[in-house]
Structure formats: structure tokens, C-alpha cells
Length: 250
Image (cartoon, rainbow, N blue to C red; front, side):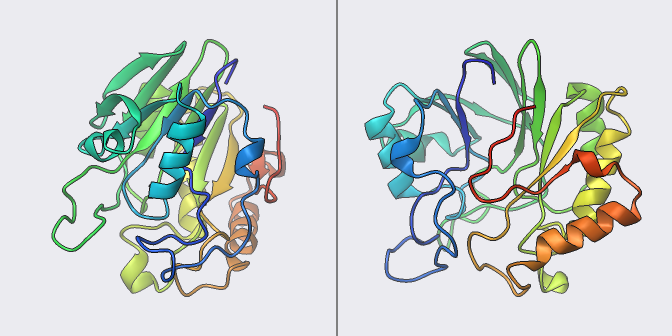
């Protein structure tokens, strides 16, 4: 945004796991090779699960991008500091920090946290809004369908783009509280867009197709998202399901 390069929940490792020989394996290579990254200014984390907070990636960033600053939800900062990260803020829901010309606000999400047995929910999970003078985006984080999307838009919008998770939803009896299905993500977007002060807001699909975490086919989330989008009679020009490594200017 402007002259600031941001990363959200970065992971370049081959597995989303505490060990390198087991756990969910990467289904596709990273969209951008790590060595091709521009200088990283700001890293934002939504929670501490292994597919969102990766030890090897954190160490790579702190080594090769030592000027990067980090923002995390409550109680995640100490883990980052032990691995060399320059943590400038740990935020609770609705708290705000101003950094590098950007207003960053921690937003509610419906999920859970924990990296090992015995520390479940000892840290917070969240989404983020980021606002510059010209643009604003909403990053929903890893979340189930919750009732706060309209409130987020009213308090922190309007937005130019909203990043919504569309994968890791089957079986529904188990995953529904913590991961939105595509039709729920489209519904959440519609709720947010209805409060978006007449500004056009792109839906950017994320959290699918990288790790095999749940039961749905790897290519199903974008197909169901397009169906839900059409059934909701939303502007097709505002739906962006990126190809791996695709770039788009807003």
C-alpha cells in the first residue's frame, strides 16, 4: 500500500507442521519465490496455527528482512520475539496502531488458537484492516461466519478490497464454527459491502489450494465461490480468485 510492502500470515515451508517430515504438505509451490520478494516493511499475523505462523519462514524474514516490523494479536508477540522479530504491537480486537503511514486495526474473527496440547486459546486470533490516505483493505483472517462483518465496515470502512477465506470447510459438522464455506464467505462479503458507503469493494479469495487440510477437493472452493457469487447477483467484475502468483493493481 503506497510505498509499504506488507505480508499476511506468510509461509514458505513445505509443510504446515512443527516438523519437516510429517503434517500437511504443500500442494503447490509458493506464488512468489522467497528470494524474489521486495523489501518487506510490515508483517501481520492473524493467529498462531502452523499454516499461518511458520517458524522457518519467520526466521527467514528476520534474517533477510531485518527492518521488517511485526503486528500480531495478543500473546503471539513473545513467540515472535524469541525468533528475532521486531514486534511493534500486540493488539486486541478493535485496537489500533499507526505505523509507516498506515492505520492498522485488529478486528474480530471466529476461530481458535494453539500450537500444542495444553495451550489451546492461550493466544488471540483476529482479522485486520489497513488504511492509507488513498486506500483501505480488510483481511478477514481465518474465520467462521460471524455477525461482525457489517460492524467492521461501519467502524473501519469503506474498503477497496476485502480478503475472505473460502477453503478448509468440510466436513461442515466439524469445520463450520471456524472456517467459512464459499457461500458463507460470499454472504459475509455482501454484509460488509452493504455498509461500504457506496465504494466498490473487490472480493479477494484466499485460504484455499495450498495445503490439504480438510475433506473437500482442492479445486472445489473457487468453483463454489463463483456459483454463490452468481446466485447472489453480485458484480462479476468485483470477484477476484487469484491464480497462484497473480498480481493485480487496485
